[in-house]
Picture 1 (cartoon, helix red, strand yellow):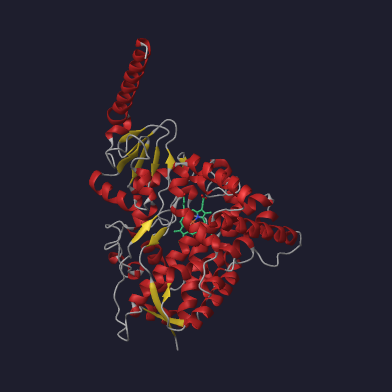
Picture 2 (spheres, helix red, strand yellow):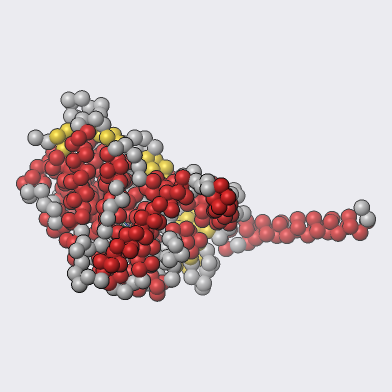
Length: 504
Ligand code: HEM
């Protein structure tokens, strides 16, 4: 090799070495974020070296609270990315008309058919407009329109439970089938056959696909080019061989089903009355383009199902431990003649407590919610954070706060039964933020409450829930949160089983 070639290579190597040295010095010692403790030694170098592996293993929201306990409210999880655990910061970031916008890198992964839905829209103006439009079906005053769908699906579910007899039922799958049919019915005016499939021992493919997708969401948002490349390869293979993954088949089948629902609903929407109120028809009547209404309903199916189904599964499991509370709750419901309307259900303090505690305890929407610091930067916890930094926190950390909820891992509905004012923890209501806060607060909160009140009360009307190993002792004890992993939604790693004994 000529001498000059060697010297060019050496210069290039030396230049790269100096560049890397300067870059590392900046990341570790000069960047304004260098004053903030690191989650791991490699966090300042790339999010792929600390945040991504923890996200991919479903551990990030479980590990970070421990790091915050050690290091304080701010922890650095990437070169330009922080995690925060502080209710004050949460309120600053998640306020109405907040200048901290949703991070498109993460929210983009949820978009269906290139039409962002309310959850994935990152532009503040577009978001506010869509939110106003959707409010007409999600507002508290519209809940009476949804009761019928819900009771119909719950009745079908209860019938199947009856047919099963005392055979233990695994709650996570069972409740997911129920909630998937309720959300699909609401969205598309038709269920997706999930309850029937569960009854015959199967899962509807799209539900399984949504589960799998939630678990690889970190991969999709961190390495989008790898996933795009994989989809291209798969599509080429399909053209030549006809082969495609089960996941792609499930997606295509669901797309076909959803489009056929849209066709049906578009023709119904021309009628002067609405025979079966549902989300897509309501949006089309309000002049949202049909394709966008369809994407919105598709985007809602996964998060709308996982959150409430996991919560219901936890509540039923918690009540199967605490027979005495369960019996008192059933007695209250019987005395009120098993109401099915929101006002009647909400009026029962023990029912409200069982559901509220279930939402807190299950902490179903586990994901961290990334926001971007506005361009002029912001001072948080006394530290200046430059514009463009991504900051995230998970609402469920506040639901586990030991000061607000002593023994947070225990299902204890009595926390919410207001006795004398002194017995109420002063932090309790402030830290209860399962639906987040501000402009992006969950629009489905009333829907979720109604779904949970109704499912729980109608199940208790028919059954007394017990643990499979409880025999005839029927002891009452408090349930401890089962071990879990956390992706977009939490996933228990143990089976949540109960027996449904017919109530006389
Ligand atoms: C226990 C049940 C539920 C919990 C804990 C929950 C939690 C949340 C949280 C924390 C957010 C904020 C996400 C963010 O800022 O990125 C959210 C947003 C959202 N949720 Fe829920 N959710 C539940 C049920 C539902 C249901 C049943 C639906 C629909 C049928 C739904 C639809 C939505 C939508 C569309 C958004 C986006 C709102 C916006 O950006 O304006 N959720 N949810």
